[in-house]
Length: 329
Image 1 (cartoon, helix red, strand yellow):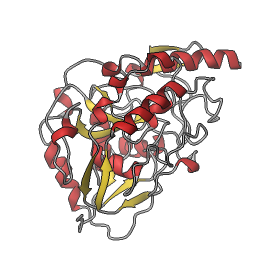
Image 2 (spheres, one colour):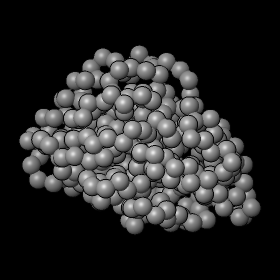
Image 3 (cartoon, one colour):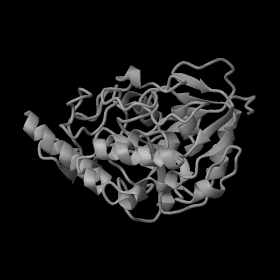
C-alpha cells in the first residue's frame, strides 16, 4: 500500500474511532442474556481468588498490593486535550467531554494481583476453543477496518489470525470465559490502571510522561505504520520500550482491552477506596488502553472507553489477572 493510501486509511480509522465519544468503538444495545452478564458475575470475580500458585507464574507480572493514584486531575485533563490535538487526525474536533469521566483523581488501595504480561494471543485462545470452554472468535459478524479502502465493514479480514497476534473479534462474555478457563478473571478498571500506571506519581502513559510515537501501535495521523512500523495489529510484545513500571507490555495501543466493570461515567466520584469494581449493570462494559487505529490520547493510562458487551471488532482484545491466595494491600 503506498504512503498516500495509508494516510487516507489512518484518517478514516482515527475519524471513526475518535469522534462522538459516547458511542466510540461501541454500539448502543442491551446486554445479551446469553452471556450471563448479571448472574454469577460477582462469583466470577470472587472465584478467581482461590488461585493457588505461590511463585511468579510464567507470562504474568506481579502488581504488589498498596495505594496508587487513579484518574485525572485538572492538569492531566489539559494534557489529554493537548495529546488529542497532537495525535488525532482532526485536532479541532477534540473535546474535553471525551476525558472528563476520568475525574476525579483519587488514591485507591488494591490487593496484590498478577496480570498477563501481554494481551491474550490467537494461539492461547485457540487452546480454550479446542478444550470446548470458549466459543471461536466471531469472525463473520466482526466489525473490521479494510486497510485497502479505509472503510469499516462486517466480516473476516486477512491478517488477523496469526498465532502471535492478540485475539480479536471476541465479545466481553468470550473474554470472561477464557479468563475463567485459564484460572483467572478479567481485571477491574482499577487493577488495569494500576498495572499500566505504577504505584507512585501520576504518569500519563505506561512508559512515562513524554509522548513517544514509536513506543506503541497506534493510529498515526501521518499514515498507519509511519512511526510504529505496523499498519494493523502488531504481534504481542512488539514494543518493549512501552512497558509499564511492572513490565506489562502493550498497555498502550495495539488493541483495546475488556475489563470486568460495567461502564459508569460517574463511578469514580463515589467508588470505594479499597478494591473498587462497578458491578451495577448498564448498557456498556469498560475498555482500556487504546488501539492500533486510535489516536494516541487513547493510550493514556487514565483514558476510559466503552462498548456494548456483545460488540466484536478488530481492535478489541483482552488480558487476564490472577489473584494469589494471600492477597492483601
